[in-house]
Length: 242
Ligand SMILES: C[S@@+](CC[C@H](N)C(=O)[O-])C[C@H]1O[C@@H](n2cnc3c(N)ncnc32)[C@H](O)[C@@H]1O
Image (cartoon, rainbow, N blue to C red):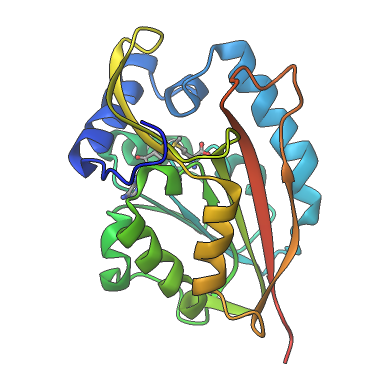
């Protein structure tokens, strides 16, 4: 569907990711929906392009919204103080807990971001980095507005917010609702917003006096982006020092 504002069924998204993890054994493919080779190449590409932009230290606290199987968590092992991963897929959280069982300070919670303001386990002093990677595309507009509006309240001074989403590059929003994908062998749901739609939402949620856009760009080159209508874009925000 192009352009129209159609809401997704949250339960269908959750069921999709639970099934993905069960079928792919919690591998990278389960959350990237790509072949093993492409999933790995994209993972490395993102790490190489982004990781050094984070102002993190051994004292840093990180929150990952829609953390999946902990794809980002692995890059932070032994480098930070606290990593909190939140995801509503039980299978994702089970996998992440198994993978990072021995990692001190790493915690994973099964929680729906739509209820983010009721989540009681947040670090009181706030987070130095928030990661949202390929998650907002599964949230309907009203819920995304609520999550974005809440985010600044859990961020420490001098913090950063890194958002990476699949965006529509054809001018209009593209919504896949109960779309049967023969590639995935499953029904798929996602909202590919345009870059300007995301900017409108960010501008509404982040007071520019507090958060400014540090940088934003497309992440993948032609060899890694297999889609004609969508691409991956990142937005890195930094909290201003007052
Ligand atoms: C494409 S995967 C990305 C996972 C991870 N961020 C990564 O980059 O590997 C999207 C994740 O968002 C989670 N998700 C989607 N909607 C959510 C919601 N309302 N609350 C919590 N997690 C959600 C899914 O369960 C899934 O693990």
